Image (cartoon, rainbow, N blue to C red; front, side, top):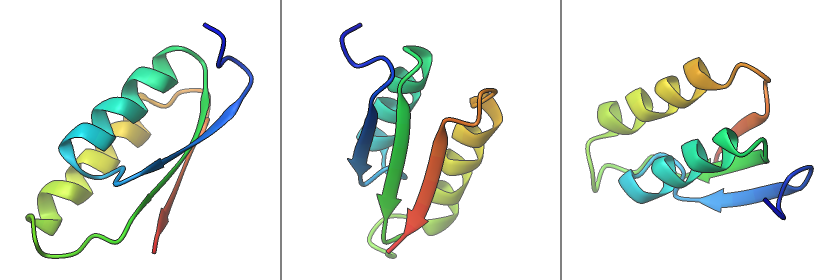
Length: 68
């Protein structure tokens, strides 16, 4: 993939689409910075669980999450 060894910013990383995007990028050995405000529009516990799942599959420690 052309994005290998790049760092990509994913906004809404705790949402459904954002979290799947992060997982896909990590599977392609891309470094990812994910941001999300974790608002209550969608269930914050569900968002937190998605971030935990991402951190669990991130064996190379290529993911950094920022709550903004």
